[in-house]
Length: 168
Picture 1 (cartoon, rainbow, N blue to C red):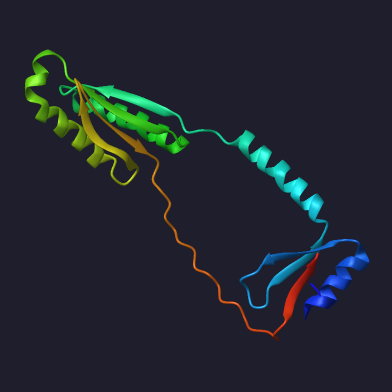
Picture 2: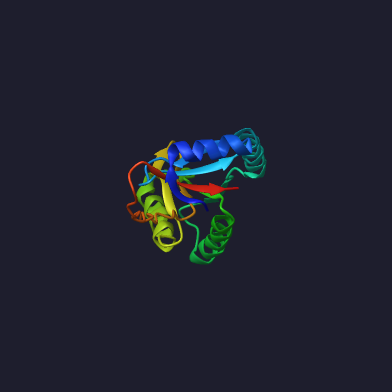
């Protein structure tokens, strides 16, 4: 940390050491700059981005199927599986299939999906609302979303024309 200094002095200091003066946060008062090798910095960030893309695992969509006549014991077992999938970070498609005479009583199946969603309401977020497509009534749920907004810290004032410098 070199503290607050005039921009010209900071540029001279960077030139003497053979490095670059890089503005890190331009909106701060005074702006924060670093003296560093910018080419090396860009190279290292590109390597980190490539590694992050390799390590990134896409969320899989698992499907749980049941019927309007599925009893509470079986539903509890399927809910246990759904909770395991959500804990890992996968999305789950809940599919309720109507067979034969069940088509005449679609409201029973729709109530069954609503009942399952009510049991999972605190443990998941609904990605796609329940909808019927032919003989299948389905919806898509995912892990709960984290909506924690971050509060910004206020920055102190310093002399005009000055910038904060850190050397790395």
